[in-house]
Amino acid sequence: MTISRAVKDYLRFLETSKGASLHTVKNYRHYLTSFQTWAEANKVERIDQLSGEDVIDYQLSLLDPNGAKRSRATVNYYLIALRSLLKYLIGRDLTVLPPEKVGLSKVPSRQISFLERDEVMRLIEAAGDQTLGGKRNRSIVAVLFSSGLRISELLGLKRNQVNLATGEFSIRGKGGKVRPGFLSENALDTLGDYIDSRADTNPNLFIRHFKNPRLDSRKNALSHRAVQRLVGQAAVKAGVTKNVTPHQIRHSFATDLLRNGADLRSVQALLGHSSITTTQIYTHVTDRSLRDIHRRFHSSGTDIPLEKHR
Image (cartoon, rainbow, N blue to C red; front, side, top):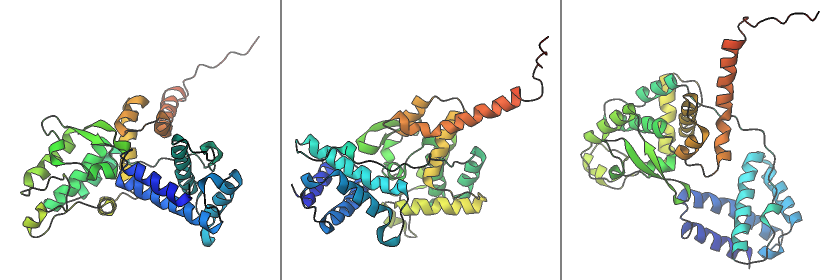
């Protein structure tokens, strides 16, 4: 099978059989197109011709494409996409390079950046005024912090999904997996005020708003960039000096849960992580909390001195 055919079949599989999001398919198309371009330039026409040495050459080309150096973490995204392609082809009983032969680059331990609760509260207040667009913006930040949603999950929500009486809703996450979502009283009040202020019939929970309200009923979905921009602008207005992103608010959600006693498995379920390993990036939070407790109660100069041995 040619590499171009293999890539085309795999992307179709992601879209149809696996139910991957449009965002995921777009990313995989980007990564695998890069591999396909490299293969054509290096005369590797068929996927069964790909060798371990080829993969090393491809990996090196990714590290320094046209003099613009990529990080090892970024390179791993390309290699993971190639692994997934090979795994898919093996599932179709094709003889190809084993996926484990595609080695990933070692990267430094990931450091999670998050906001303190008071910073999030300031962010919500600064996100918007009493206009319809302002109420929407405050609702977006409040819902992100209350439920730990990814941007794609937030923008995929429909109005009829959210139970305003209980503050519960269903989230369709990566791979089409459904998990429960919950809203705090603050988020519920903020969202309820926004929904009550809308006069349109648009089914989407968060939409673009126009000076002419009649245009709001059209399918005017917000873009990922629009959400990123409004969060960044709110941070500046709130005086939060950190580089705030929607995903950082997701980190803050997980951090807040762990600090208040939630166990890692529960946080995994609420974040929609398929593996507990992914959630373990937050263990630094509990580690630091334990360290602070130790310093407060055990390192205050009240230790009992040891008697000298006689």
